[in-house]
Length: 112
Length: 146
View 1 (tube, each protein chain N blue to C red):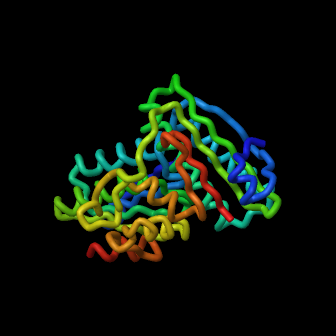
View 2: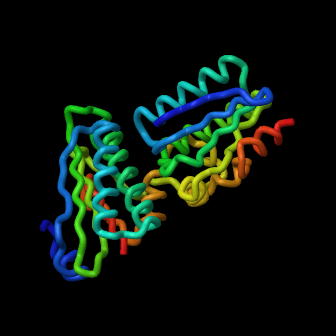
């Protein structure tokens, strides 16, 4: 799992590449999110265009951080989720919890 | 070949494609799942079906590691991949744990469980696969994709 974080218009954009599943991938994403929140960054976009698998441990991580970030007045939004990421989130009834966008730009602009 | 009489009667003779025991470790099971995906590509299984089988295998193996082995990498989980003459796929995952009762699996779509950080694996498997059975005492899962 490759994780690349960059700031765009006061929004942190996380680009993920690879399967997001139990083990090093989920652990690395958890650490990334914890570091962002510790720095006071609660406006976050996660690009899932190159994530072919999102397992239940990753889903648990995403919803836990979504709740935590919203409590702090921010949001965690999804950009370009792959069709299988969308299918998985829909299967467990959680797609509706996330705002999703067709591009990083649209997701970033939605925070304005 | 390790089909049970019931499986044989219902699905015909099974061909073994893959049988591997690995350490109860997240990276080891990821390798197994990736190997299953590659095997399905070689069999010409369509992408959608491959995704559903691979994610179900990931969930079953993760459950085996966490619940069946207590995240102890000195223990092992076994994964078998088989196909019947009609191209239907069977995956069996076995762990050395005491097993569990399906009755205790909550519905993750209940409002009060929306933000829970666990408890979706078995639900996902049931959504992704066509037939799912836990063998007594619950430490082996057999799941079919038609």
